Length: 67
Image (cartoon, rainbow, N blue to C red):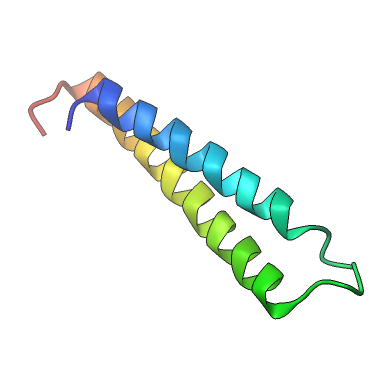
């Protein structure tokens, strides 16, 4: 994948991850279920994946698409 592709995929994954965390609600909410906890964890993982993809895009931009 190229620099731009990595950055775009990273932005999308980060946004979707944040949305999942927001849908899960507040961690202190007494109505929060295990499914909400699972969704929040999944969202956090997806957000981190997106940040990693963005970083790879920046590295590829600095080094060129040869890597």
